Length: 260
Ligand SMILES: Nc1ncnc2c1ncn2[C@@H]1O[C@H](COP(=O)(O)OP(=O)(O)OP(=O)(O)O)[C@@H](O)[C@H]1O
Image (tube, rainbow, N blue to C red; front, top):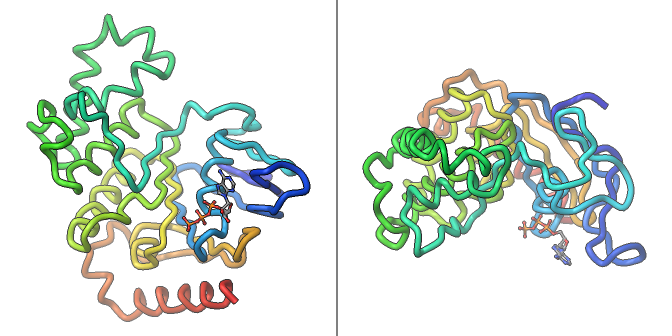
């Protein structure tokens, strides 16, 4: 199977063989540079897909590959951001962004010597997401939206080839969420990073993704795959256009079916 991220015939149960399956016969392939979104009913295995693709869980059956290699340990070329920004309260925003570099090789070896260059990179990322000058602030001095921006910088600081976003904007108000859609859109356009986004928000999926995968109810597998051909760069105005709303409506229908 070809693709930058592939799952082929994947079966997984958290309790091991003989326990209830989380995903079964889960098969999909995501191309390099693609922006993929995964939607589906609650508990269908979306987060499990993310854990399998990043080597935080391993399948009982089937194969997962990233960048042509079978996933057998945590995937170093991936960055991740979740619904809770989970910034460390005793570190400044900048030091939170630098954290992965203190853990992930080859940066870990270099960070002491090259700290100034790494700081510069982190500051450039903060500026890119609209947080210039906020590096010295502590997380509790930032709004929820600002914390999520910082968490995105932390996911990107080691220049991952794959960015995994699991409900990253779920806890934010509608306006902040839409601002962050634009931040992610611009990061994707500028860096060409491959992105997999898990979301409950179908407008978010249609606005951001090149392709949307709809999962079945548990045990999850892919029911429908939709190519989203709205031209880029996409503007928020698009979300009010009839073809956009038709697509959201169609996806909603698939999820209603999947829940049955
Ligand atoms: N650590 C775990 N131990 C046991 N079961 C788990 C564990 N994590 C998830 N599950 C179960 O596996 C199934 C899939 O979970 P997963 O979190 O992947 O679903 P999801 O689609 O991301 O859910 P949601 O949309 O509610 O966030 C769920 O039914 C869940 O209860």
